[in-house]
Image (cartoon, rainbow, N blue to C red):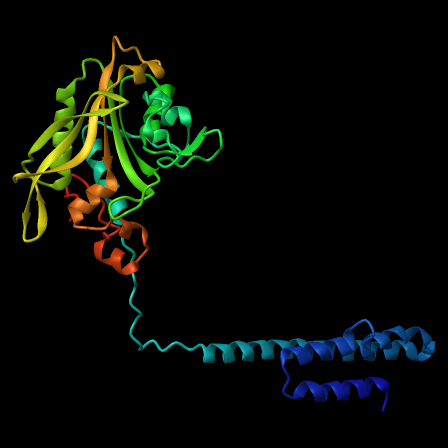
Length: 355
């Protein structure tokens, strides 16, 4: 038997046995690799007598094609068998009940921001945003805060450099400054966002959320401020009537300044906003100080206006009966599942804010 027939018979026998993909590829290498048996036979053609060379080459090509076809067929068979085996192992029983889908909830703070934004948008306020890292001028100086004011102390403010020029904003009022510096009056904006102060207990956190409002135009007065806040509080707490009082206060950036209290009563151990003989402080406000307007190049002979600041977390606690501010930031899924909101139920004044 010639060498070619021996090679053919040997590898035909191997290819008929049960092989895996690695073994089939090894046979392919043994035959057709750089030093494979068939490859070497082609190298010998030049040394074969010329009278036998044509027949030898013809037979070699036939054997090569036959073995190559069988190898390719074997590879296809092995791959199909391996896929079928894998599918069998991963077979899904379609009669099993489906797994429950766990849908996320909207955090009460995010819900409250959406509610606040919806209310103020209805009365013509636009929403502005700014960076959490602020400069000292926008956060303090432009807002008429004196150099000796306690708010500038390190125990109240997170400074980011030794010169105290970079800091984490202590309120969102710098957004008002940026807006007035980059545009021209009139202004009617709210600025919700994160703020930072060095404080932490049951009702305070080092990071919390505020929304500050600003309305600058001609002939704006305290009556406009009172009307705006009265509308907002009634809409937010979803009550028809609200008892509200303004108490004189002091803020560097407003003059006159006031703190706003709302009436409430206790029923069945819960706070009921609207009527009652008890008072609860809810926000600070006032007419924008002329020095603030001068710092942003607004003509105080033509324009004046009001500003207010509201703690978003505090509003959420009051409206939804949450008694510990720290729970907002503990990432407890059980808590969020209880107090959270349906992600598809976007609050609007028409459909109800907090269904």
